[in-house]
Length: 86
Image (cartoon, rainbow, N blue to C red; front, side):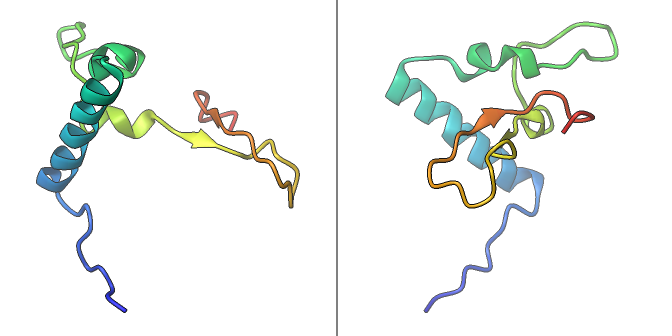
């Protein structure tokens, strides 16, 4: 059994994965990832958004199944947008 020691431990690895996901969204769904997830784009120091989702901003994307009862056979996932409420 092979144990993977490679992890997303640096910015280059995280950026490589994010770019792969962006390309997959483009080729499989014909959509622009940055447009679909534009609500994750944060304001910079100048008070503007750059229109590109980066490795920091994507960390705000979280899906959970916390509303399912314990042991539920069919689980329903929903995006969690309110971290304080979560």
